[in-house]
Length: 537
Image 1 (tube, rainbow, N blue to C red):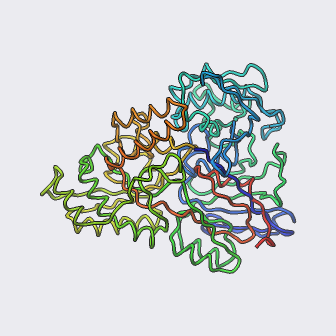
Image 2: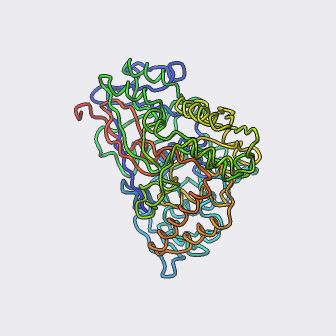
């Protein structure tokens, strides 16, 4: 399935508007006098620290939020989820489905003014494969570095090892990086210039990095010479991302008129409260992912499928969906946003404590005192509410829930090994590339194990085989049939509790225009698609 994403950016009218979202201490307000008459500065909060600014290393929504603004991909994604031209204006695929030839635009420039050439993209993709820490997991083993070539300045050729259906879906994540600039700042012990890229923008994107404090904030400024231009209205000149998840702080800033755009994932009451304030609006869309409780199939007690099913039956879905984190039933591991691949026979989770007890009685831990470790992102209030709700339900069936909130970076660290991954972990999961494969390979394939997305540690040969099968065919009907079979098999193994497909919510200043949801992680926060218009509302 293809995915599309467009975003219009907020702009400021005749006078400067400083929109601040974050703690007052972390993001002090700047008086309008500090800005030129026509400058638009927008502040946005993030729920967790930025994982990375390096396109080769990003793994979560903050990282993708950074790179989609500072870098351009070979292709991009439109609002329908479709792969559309970006740096590549067109492409050809050989009859055997193995050779992809991309024809590049001739007007793209890096932020230092130098031209983007095919050699830069070839090197960038080789770098992605060489570092092998982020999106590379999609193409490692499929694409060899030596098979990425640039026969001339405007042509990029990639020859893959075998037919691979998600290949084009990975191309938006093949970001152009300034080879000359990065190599000039690399060191012998750091051939790919990771230290430099981790603190500077080295792309052709619509925004340049101004400052970056990993644990606090990031500021990006509009690239006035961006090759795609700025024709969507009054553009956003500066975006200030601030790490804060404190609901009270966000509401207080809105009350002062200092909130520009909130993150998603705040408490339900926070959105409702801000949405009622003068000068603000609530943006709400469906999502292509969901909020899940990942169950580690390799450790006590969730190594037993009956325990996992008991936890699923002990989850109060309606309270989560209607009160804590508004949304709708997930119906298994794949969102119905992927309508052709979605298995409509998968039933939503059912809250039934008696059935939970029955499943527990079938487990190898029947009759024993069971303690279940549950982790979630410490800064997220709604996740704490979900954990407490689950704790109360599980207590009624004889399971003690040991709640352990952790910083996001600690959760990522723990997920690298099965023995350190908690028995259950609450996370939001969404596609990182526009294909159902993103929801299956990243979570459930053995080769993807060791990331926060694969905390199930499923490592099931049958599941691996089905994922490999769908990746090896280009026949769409066959792909969808296999995806539906995968959903049935995975649902039966219950490696997750699919709690809710949440409504994606943002609180925004009414002057901020152009938001459009893209079913791909953070692609809807490309600020070059926003504009500012206070008269539109």
